[in-house]
Length: 235
Image 1 (tube, rainbow, N blue to C red):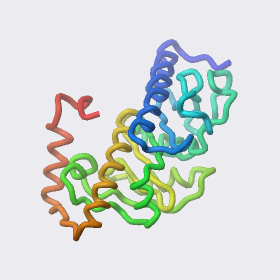
Image 2 (tube, one colour):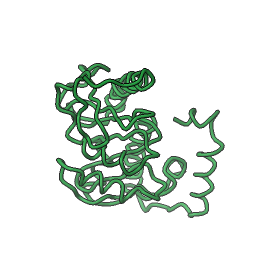
Image 3 (spheres, rainbow, N blue to C red):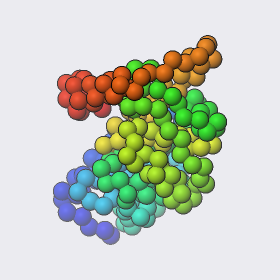
Image 4 (tube, rainbow, N blue to C red):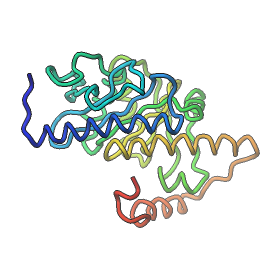
């Protein structure tokens, strides 16, 4: 059985609880179908993260059946949930955590409108102020990649490293989002579907009016640094 310090054990318990609870938000905002999609969270102070088990109903997710993995995506033996297989996207999440140490949460959904943009391989243009606030520009498209190894993770990192956006539309697949923690990444997943839907309907009705880059920069700076009560309030 793997033994951790009391501090790390406490962090693992907290992240297990957060990740289990946050999966309900994907259901609440209609971002997934059946057992698809996943949330993961990095364990502060350790090279570990927590992710959901593969193919388990969202109604059955609990802190105890969340799966603890190292940053290679290997299940930590002798821990709660270690008798189950982790999400099929575990390798992608692990790659992001290894290569983006500032990231504390990763989310994948199959939300309808974001997937539709991904199916066209088309970025979502920044034409509404809420999108400038949250993402600081367009939502980019990442390369097509097959599930099963870290190819998706490589595409996420290559696309989002140095980019303001916390969301990427993996071509022919769907959205992945990142955040400072799991809750922040879930918020990004909710918001990317919202803007994907709004911009889709706007384009159906007529030509889109791009926001000037200067306006995008000002909106993003204000939202990230001034809006709300604190940095935590924005999450």
